[in-house]
Image (cartoon, rainbow, N blue to C red; front, side):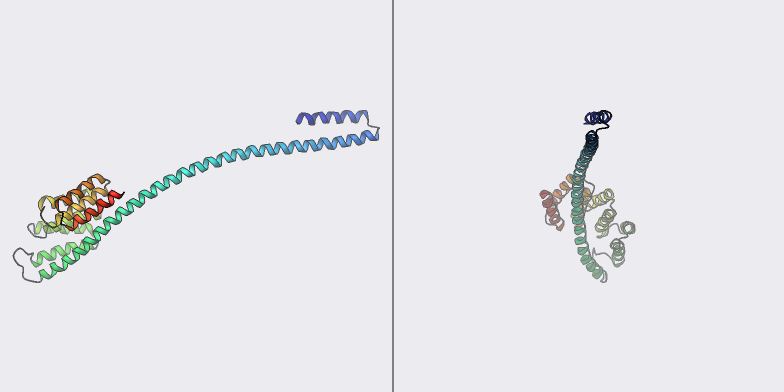
Length: 252
């Protein structure tokens, strides 16, 4: 089309020199000039449209690439959100379990306080012993976990043969768990199982160990502990909690 425009310009120039004195020639020249100008404008417009299409095609390609990246990011976001949901459910289960144990603890505390006001029977903790245990337990309930650990450890040093010793050791483990020091929690609860395997706190200690294992990401180890808990202490409330967790794990 550019060659056509150039040819038309040459024809226009040649005609102008040959027919300059002829009115008809001048009219034709003027018409030819207008045609050339119109052709030039058409060429420019077509070239402009061609450039726009090229830019649009390039932009469309970039948009398509961005759409692909966005789709990948959405997929990754869904995976992360699913992981967060699972973690939240697990954390909720752990806190529900702790809350249930605290309610049981409150009932046991009331019984202990009532017993502390009476003369101690054979094997029952004396008032000073019960008060020391209660003071340590209050630190746990207030969320002062380091103080609770120190208080319970002091209790065990002062009253190593107390009937409350297994519970004191259990709450040391639970205090570590509340601080998310899961390895220390497992080690502390293992002492309950080693020293007092027949105590009522032993199955609770094993359940807390399973919770710590799961928090560390060792789901297989947690499952084995829960299965052992059900087998070893089948009649305990902790075994019922273990069964529920095992059932939930089977559904995942």
